[in-house]
Length: 258
Ligand code: CO8
Figure 1 (cartoon, rainbow, N blue to C red):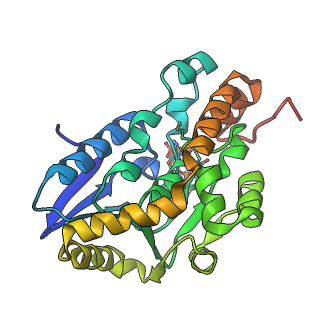
Figure 2: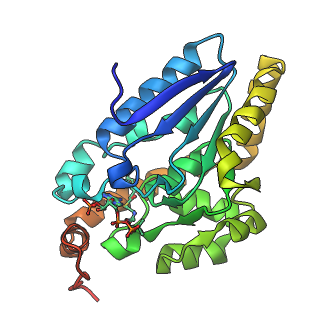
């Protein structure tokens, strides 16, 4: 598969994937997610690779799912196609460790993708948020569930209900990211951390990952399935049409149901 929305590079035992739609702040469209899935699965199957890093640009890890691609979808569309979640979850399903190296915006699906990785290294300028409420929807790829587990109910509720973003310092204080790194060093630091992991005993690393996830994921599946279905149901509302159209037309949304 030839990639147009991501770049891939092998650094010793590390597979480095760079999200690359600079004109759309790396908004996650279907093509990008298909390519990301393909790259993750290739590295997963490659015996020479022991760990992976997903990163974006210094301005944006990813500013969310592609709103312009979602805008025309109806409830029937998103429900029947089980809207893109089939390959959205690959980062959380691979068995080798995946580090998210986040600089700039990680919003909506971008924040959700970072949280699917095993841990997050943040550049000093990182900004995390779940702003879907401004579009008349809610997070749809695990945000309400994973963010709450990372930062606790109060902060997660405020972020999901108000779209408030968290900067890197607050994210580190709250346990969303493991540490903060200068933006210019972020990718190298992530690759060097991934290299250390890749040089360890592979079964120990994979079993350690599985065990930490067991503590974290028990009952998460139920929450995610619930969230996906209610996310779909919001595509039946006028406010979803209005919220997404307003974004594309660069104006303030006039929500009817309030
Ligand atoms: N989708 C599509 N295009 C986008 C997106 C996006 N999420 N974000 C930015 N862009 C585009 C802009 O439209 C703009 O394009 P153009 O130049 O053609 O107008 C370009 O990127 C640059 O963006 P801005 O001019 O807006 O840049 P600013 O620096 O002024 O602002 C922001 C940066 C604050 C990040 C702003 O772009 C923004 O608010 N973006 C949208 C953030 C957002 O709402 N994200 C959530 C999206 S919904 C979602 O992720 C749901 C996930 C559910 C997953 C479902 C699975 C089942």
